[in-house]
Image (cartoon, rainbow, N blue to C red; front, side, top):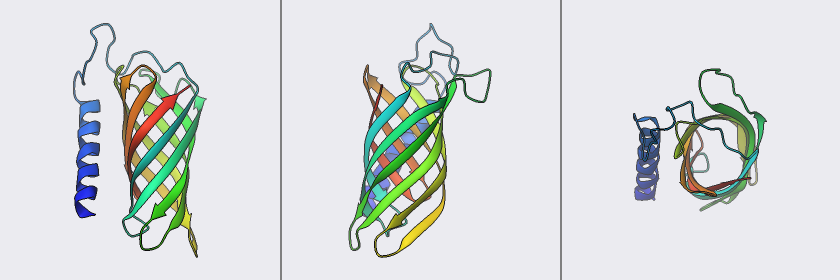
Length: 167
C-alpha cells in the first residue's frame, strides 16, 4: 500500500510541475501561457481512484461531476474558470466507507494540454459514523486528446488519479 501512495504522489508531483513549468508539454506558439482559449464545455464528468487518507489508507473509487459557475474566473489577466463540483464514492479496505466532497474547483488554463486547479470545500465519510471536515487541495488536468483528459489531485483526505470528460 505504501508503494501505491508513493506512485500516486510521484505522478501528482510530475503533473503539477509539468503544468506550471515554462512552456509545459507540447506548448503552442500561437497562444501565450495562461491566456489561451477557455474550454468550450460547461460541465465535466469523471472517474477517479486512489487512496483515501482519512479512512486509514483505504482504496478509494470516486465519481466526479462539475458545473461551471463563472466562465471568466476571478483574475482578469488569465484564463480561469470556477466550478461547483461533487465527488462521491467508496473507500474499501479494513473498513468500507461512503466518501463525499462538495467543493469549488478553480481551474487555471495554462495551455491546450495543462490546466492546474485548486479545490476548497467540505468532505467526509459515512460507514458506521458520520464525518464532515474542510477540504483543500490541488491538482491538474492533462488533455491527452480531444474529448478526454487525465486528472490527478491531492488533498487533505484523498490522493486521486483518473479521467475526466468535458461537455
